[in-house]
Image 1 (cartoon, rainbow, N blue to C red):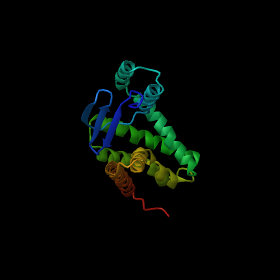
Image 2: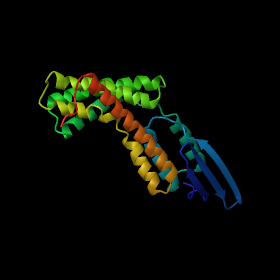
Image 3: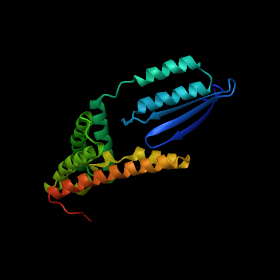
Image 4: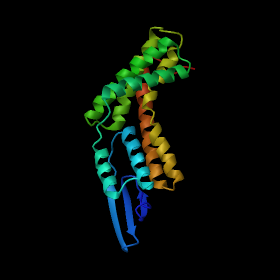
Length: 221
């Protein structure tokens, strides 16, 4: 985008903020700014629209003023419908259960367990509860619900239902972003994102273990 507007930039991504320096060689002027990184949920809709905007600029399809106006519109993009996200996330996790060999009963249990845990996650995030606590409580709720398949002998693969009931909490995107940052040379940010992902994974595991202990289950071989 900077090249399309005949600018030179230097970008440094840090764990808590972004440093941006813009050089205008035609006017021999330089601008620098530091912006704090806001903690927010991932919106694939916004990411897609930002990607399209960047390519439109790079292909010289829009002017700077048009790009600025479009960017402001993108920032106002409403959040996805929570009910739709809840149902789709539950269906996706149910599909993971099937991929790991779960039978239809286990798939149904995972769907309901995800429905309970993900809804709890939505409520806690709205209350601005710490994300690590959210992961612990959501994993705990889903694992307790998923353990019902083993306790009441529902289906032939109850252990798969327990194991996959919390997969919706796996922080895959933070892991991917950390690797991407490392490959791009942003080592400090890569380390910070990797540690965040590790903490979330540990919180997930803690909630899962707590749910299994509460329901009197031992690790299955």
